[in-house]
Length: 205
Image (cartoon, rainbow, N blue to C red; front, side, top):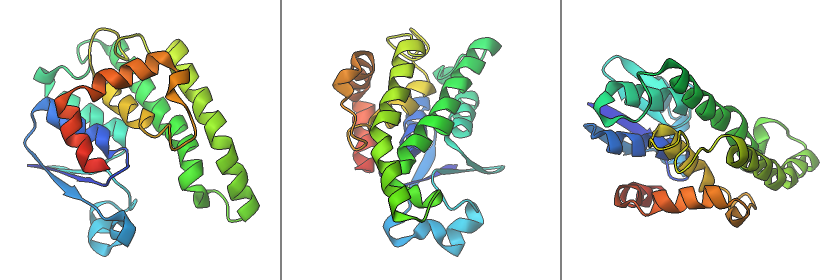
């Protein structure tokens, strides 16, 4: 059985939604970040990065959201969570998820994880001040050039939508009014109306 290690207010939500949508048999284990459980010897043996999500499989542990999402889509092809039969479209989906992971998530982390990049209090505050503009710029690029509508890939719902939904959930805390992004706001509303999404997201507050 798959075991997903997750924590509230993290990008693990995307993988959690994918597992549910795929109809996977899995167990979800909450990691208490407040007590630094992710730095415990037990968790570091599972994931030396000391972060969530981590997905235990029969062949070992997987980390990094783009990898987890692709794995789930490929393991459960009947759920049609990615364009697996179209190499170019699949690469486009991967490019989108990679942008969220390598650029957007990092821009967000400058507000809450600035100590990864600086120790100077003035530098930390400067990074925080830049977050609203950086996040808005990223989201405008997505809205204007990547989001085909109604879903990321067009008519086909995919794991990219689950990841985008997770990230847009952070915008208010980052000082971004999603009303400035009508297409992304509509995407978020559409997903938020899904009872499956509501049930899983309740675990992440």
